[in-house]
Amino acid sequence: MASLTASSLSFLRFLLLQAKPGFLSSAVLVSNLRKASLSFSGKGFPSHRLPALRFRVACAAKPETVNKVVEIVKKQLALPDDRDVNGESKFATLGADSLDTVEIVMGLEEEFGICVEEESAQSITTVQEAADMIEKLLEKK
Image (cartoon, rainbow, N blue to C red; front, top):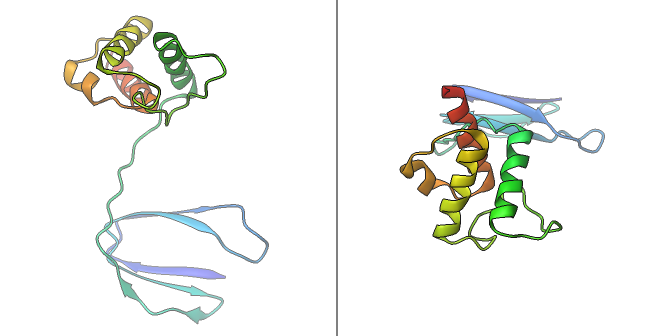
């Protein structure tokens, strides 16, 4: 049995991961956690002051949107079909220069029927960022 006690906690979520039997493995997403203590089967650990933690919560785009973006990026950059491109793929790592990025954005605008502002277009560096931006713009339509 494990327990966690915390103060000044505005958000806490445990995500249990697969682990060996009898062993607890968890990921904790927190915001504004100042002090925490943890105990396992009655054995306590001292409380510790933690630095202020801040995490950005973002909703990921639908897999279909990411897949369409991947297709457009591969087409614009003339990448082979066997080249692994996913949400974390950075345009620069894939060989895109600034002109290629503009062409990718234009292809996304045409495919999804959206208009991307220049500021937003310049801030896109990964496939996932492009997909997230598309979802946000489609919600506003």
